[in-house]
Image 1 (cartoon, rainbow, N blue to C red):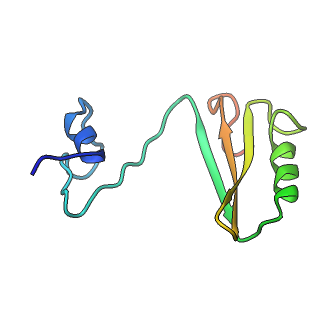
Image 2 (cartoon, rainbow, N blue to C red):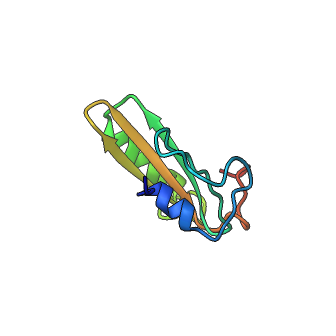
Length: 100
């Protein structure tokens, strides 16, 4: 059976994994966790639909409000009962996670 989707991307990649097998078992799937020097992401899901409150939170922590100068934040609705505050730290080397 030929790998498709994520399995095909991992299989054809020139990068070797830091841990775990270098091949994906197509009957079980795979999980990829990555890190980059360019952007760090923090996503906070909540069981609430108060979008106005989440927009205020997103603005308060982001560079467009009074928050970190390299932070982007947004409120995202997922279904009828979950809202996520998604944050992108654009310069993690300049502003560490301890500041977030």
